[in-house]
Length: 55
Image 1: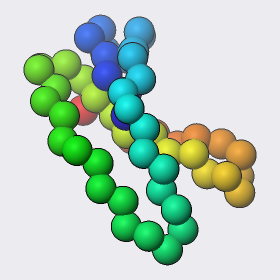
Image 2 (image 1 turned 180 degrees about the vertical axis):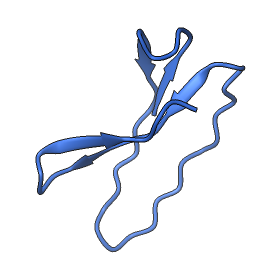
Image 3 (image 1 turned 180 degrees about the horizontal axis):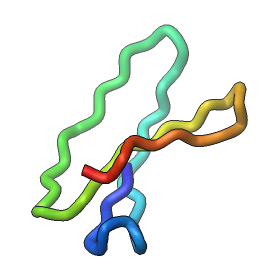
Image 4 (image 1 turned 30 degrees about the vertical axis):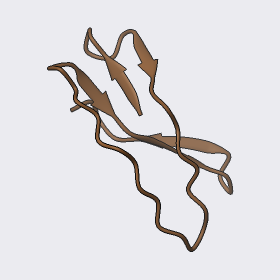
């Protein structure tokens, strides 16, 4: 997950969790404190990351 105080121009990376094929993964909730956050995932087969929009 990423967190930004300025609409995504500058962001900080929050702790990551490995998601393994065929397994469920849980991440702890994070209080956003009124800042924008988004989730990203790495697609190993495509060699690229995908992220949600800033919410």
